[in-house]
Length: 122
Image 1 (cartoon, rainbow, N blue to C red):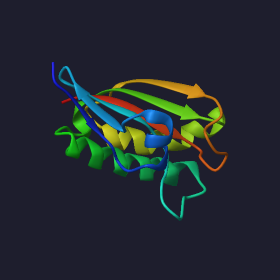
Image 2 (spheres, rainbow, N blue to C red; image 1 turned 120 degrees about the vertical axis):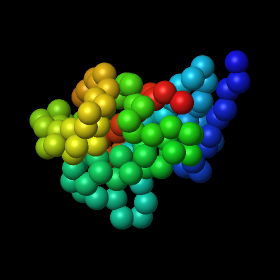
Image 3 (cartoon, helix red, strand yellow; image 1 turned 90 degrees about the horizontal axis):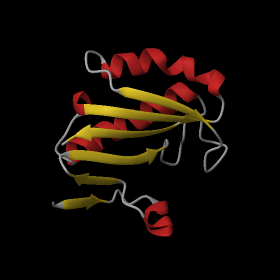
Image 4 (cartoon, rainbow, N blue to C red; image 1 turned 135 degrees about the horizontal axis):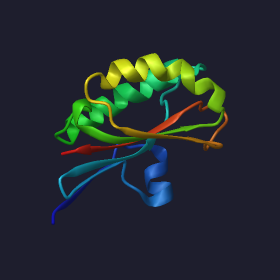
Protein backbone atom coordinates (compact mmCIF):
# COMPACT_ATOMS: atom_id res chain seq x y z
CA UNK A 1 0.00 0.00 0.00
CA UNK A 2 1.26 3.44 -0.91
CA UNK A 3 1.23 6.08 1.83
CA UNK A 4 1.57 9.74 0.91
CA UNK A 5 2.24 12.31 3.61
CA UNK A 6 1.49 15.97 2.90
CA UNK A 7 2.78 18.74 5.14
CA UNK A 8 1.19 22.18 5.16
CA UNK A 9 4.14 24.07 6.62
CA UNK A 10 2.47 24.55 10.00
CA UNK A 11 4.83 25.27 12.90
CA UNK A 12 3.79 22.22 14.91
CA UNK A 13 4.26 19.58 12.19
CA UNK A 14 8.02 19.31 12.67
CA UNK A 15 7.96 20.18 16.39
CA UNK A 16 5.48 17.42 17.20
CA UNK A 17 6.32 15.04 14.34
CA UNK A 18 3.22 14.66 12.22
CA UNK A 19 1.91 15.31 8.72
CA UNK A 20 -1.16 17.49 8.21
CA UNK A 21 -2.62 15.01 5.73
CA UNK A 22 -1.97 11.32 5.06
CA UNK A 23 -3.36 9.50 2.02
CA UNK A 24 -3.50 5.72 2.49
CA UNK A 25 -5.78 2.80 1.70
CA UNK A 26 -8.18 4.88 -0.35
CA UNK A 27 -8.67 7.44 2.42
CA UNK A 28 -7.48 10.95 3.23
CA UNK A 29 -6.77 11.45 6.94
CA UNK A 30 -6.45 15.08 8.03
CA UNK A 31 -5.01 16.06 11.38
CA UNK A 32 -7.08 18.40 13.51
CA UNK A 33 -6.77 21.99 12.35
CA UNK A 34 -7.46 25.34 13.93
CA UNK A 35 -7.82 28.84 12.52
CA UNK A 36 -4.48 30.11 11.21
CA UNK A 37 -2.73 33.31 10.27
CA UNK A 38 -1.80 36.60 11.86
CA UNK A 39 -5.40 37.73 12.38
CA UNK A 40 -7.24 34.77 13.93
CA UNK A 41 -10.95 35.51 14.32
CA UNK A 42 -12.18 35.65 17.91
CA UNK A 43 -15.58 34.01 17.34
CA UNK A 44 -16.18 30.30 16.95
CA UNK A 45 -18.23 30.61 13.72
CA UNK A 46 -15.53 32.67 11.98
CA UNK A 47 -12.86 30.25 13.18
CA UNK A 48 -14.96 27.33 11.96
CA UNK A 49 -15.35 28.97 8.52
CA UNK A 50 -11.58 29.56 8.36
CA UNK A 51 -10.84 25.92 9.15
CA UNK A 52 -13.39 24.67 6.62
CA UNK A 53 -11.73 26.78 3.88
CA UNK A 54 -8.41 25.16 4.76
CA UNK A 55 -9.97 21.68 4.82
CA UNK A 56 -11.46 22.21 1.35
CA UNK A 57 -8.10 23.34 -0.03
CA UNK A 58 -6.22 20.48 1.61
CA UNK A 59 -8.73 17.90 0.36
CA UNK A 60 -8.32 19.27 -3.16
CA UNK A 61 -4.55 19.01 -2.80
CA UNK A 62 -5.03 15.37 -1.76
CA UNK A 63 -7.29 14.61 -4.74
CA UNK A 64 -10.55 14.60 -2.77
CA UNK A 65 -13.28 17.07 -1.86
CA UNK A 66 -15.71 18.00 0.91
CA UNK A 67 -18.44 15.69 -0.48
CA UNK A 68 -16.16 12.69 0.19
CA UNK A 69 -15.75 13.39 3.93
CA UNK A 70 -16.97 10.31 5.81
CA UNK A 71 -15.94 11.20 9.37
CA UNK A 72 -15.47 14.48 11.21
CA UNK A 73 -14.43 15.23 14.78
CA UNK A 74 -15.07 18.63 16.33
CA UNK A 75 -12.97 19.53 19.37
CA UNK A 76 -14.33 22.50 21.31
CA UNK A 77 -13.31 23.96 24.69
CA UNK A 78 -16.80 25.35 25.38
CA UNK A 79 -19.46 22.86 24.25
CA UNK A 80 -22.16 25.52 24.68
CA UNK A 81 -20.69 27.41 21.70
CA UNK A 82 -20.97 24.50 19.27
CA UNK A 83 -24.59 25.13 18.26
CA UNK A 84 -23.57 28.46 16.69
CA UNK A 85 -21.61 26.45 14.07
CA UNK A 86 -24.43 24.08 13.14
CA UNK A 87 -25.87 26.14 10.23
CA UNK A 88 -22.40 26.54 8.68
CA UNK A 89 -21.62 22.84 9.08
CA UNK A 90 -25.00 21.81 7.69
CA UNK A 91 -24.48 24.07 4.66
CA UNK A 92 -20.93 22.81 4.18
CA UNK A 93 -21.76 19.11 4.15
CA UNK A 94 -25.22 19.51 2.58
CA UNK A 95 -26.39 16.27 0.97
CA UNK A 96 -23.22 14.43 2.09
CA UNK A 97 -23.30 14.50 5.91
CA UNK A 98 -20.43 12.57 7.50
CA UNK A 99 -20.44 10.59 10.73
CA UNK A 100 -19.51 13.08 13.44
CA UNK A 101 -18.33 13.40 17.02
CA UNK A 102 -17.94 16.49 19.21
CA UNK A 103 -15.43 16.42 22.05
CA UNK A 104 -15.17 19.16 24.65
CA UNK A 105 -11.64 19.76 25.98
CA UNK A 106 -8.88 22.36 26.08
CA UNK A 107 -7.03 23.12 22.86
CA UNK A 108 -3.34 23.95 22.42
CA UNK A 109 -3.98 27.69 23.08
CA UNK A 110 -6.96 29.51 24.64
CA UNK A 111 -7.40 31.71 21.54
CA UNK A 112 -8.70 28.69 19.61
CA UNK A 113 -12.44 28.05 19.84
CA UNK A 114 -12.66 24.95 17.63
CA UNK A 115 -10.46 22.30 16.03
CA UNK A 116 -11.71 20.06 13.21
CA UNK A 117 -10.34 16.70 12.04
CA UNK A 118 -11.67 14.85 8.98
CA UNK A 119 -11.39 11.55 7.17
CA UNK A 120 -12.44 11.43 3.52
CA UNK A 121 -12.41 9.04 0.61
CA UNK A 122 -9.46 9.67 -1.69
